[in-house]
Image (tube, rainbow, N blue to C red; front, side, top):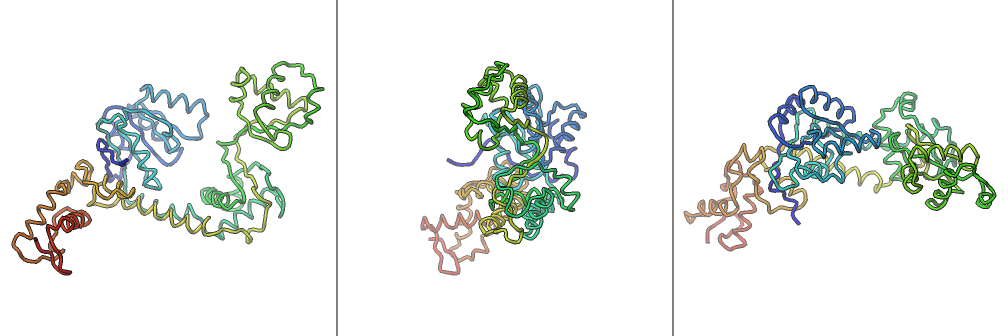
Length: 433
């Protein structure tokens, strides 16, 4: 199945005033819109600026409470708000068919991410646009992301050792243990940049040493602190606590040997109680010394996946580091090419990334509009090439130059004519048969 979206126009618009251009784009268009930005703070600031300009806008990012995210998503889907300003956390599972405009204020890290986010426009088959606002600062920013996403190996080792010192973890200790981790305090104490630390954690998790969960992803944890056979002798004064305890035993395994993560909302559904009632029942069980209940907190955690080792002994293999770095560089460079290529149709650039090399120019993107001749069909191009050879003389490939047509398309047409035996090539010159 082709990745082509004939109804979707891709545009890269140079912009030194992204907010002003965004407001203009929204005022000149109709229907629902999604605006993507990289930072959580940027979603809020942009939505407030749009509201100040008289546009109906909400913002969405992963750090919002679950109920708040659901409310905002539903409001936008019901057209109670026209514009959703969001990070890439928004959109998975969203199937709103009548989105007419998707705007990116920042280029994503990859063509895959951009194609997926841009593709949320026009799912009803009606005309829609995906516009990426771009400037010279974005070129530098994209290039810098490589070093930020893949800190040097020595920096990763240094951060690993500093975390152990910060959490007071000795060599050979802490396997499987979850520790609360204050990223801000850690960075202030050891003079690290937060983004560098988080990306070092990603590399360390791939290598199997430790994992980091930011404060917006932490869950409640419980462990049974009585023996299984003791439960039969315990009489709970509150029936609600008995119901919750029974559900815990049925739904979760390993609860007697270690802490397990739970969702109060899931328990509430199983027990036919409210989430608030489940919370108080768990607190009562904790007070009775039947379970140890650690409610979800607004803090981050670090989990040691293996016993702590000296940082110099970390095995950061090519599969963990160099190969992934090479893949990431390819994604970043492909995104840069998409944003800066002034001659190739945007749709063709996207499709060629996904190995669809036989597509034709869309005729609608900014490149095609700037260079109308690029919409020439393959058949028309072949006819133009044959016209050059009509004089019966041999012609070099350099003579097949047409304004605003990229070299790749000309090569495709030549290959087709050779395959159809309409022309021949003697190693230096082309002739019409």
